[in-house]
Amino acid sequence: MELTVWGIITALIVGLIVGALGRLAVPGRQNMPIWLHMLIGVGAALLGTVIARASGFADTAGIDWRELLLQVLLAAVAVALVAGVGRRRGVTHR
Figure 1 (cartoon, rainbow, N blue to C red):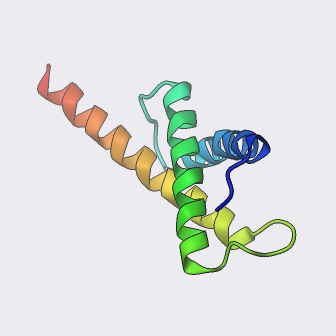
Figure 2 (figure 1 turned 60 degrees about the horizontal axis):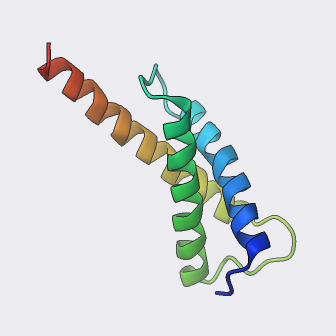
């Protein structure tokens, strides 16, 4: 996997979008700042790309919808986990 400046910039932009979509995919209210959703999205985008490349379905012409769906699912799971941990921490501190 070749890592270029343009590839990093693209991953960041896609990650921001994936973070927002991951937030929308999780039902209910998440008591998390938007920057944390975006950070989770960037991580999910990078992890999704690694998994897609390892699985062999990231090399398509144009937009790879399967890779994008994988990234959004990873972001949604991560947002749900982080939001759940935050809720539990908030309950125990009361």
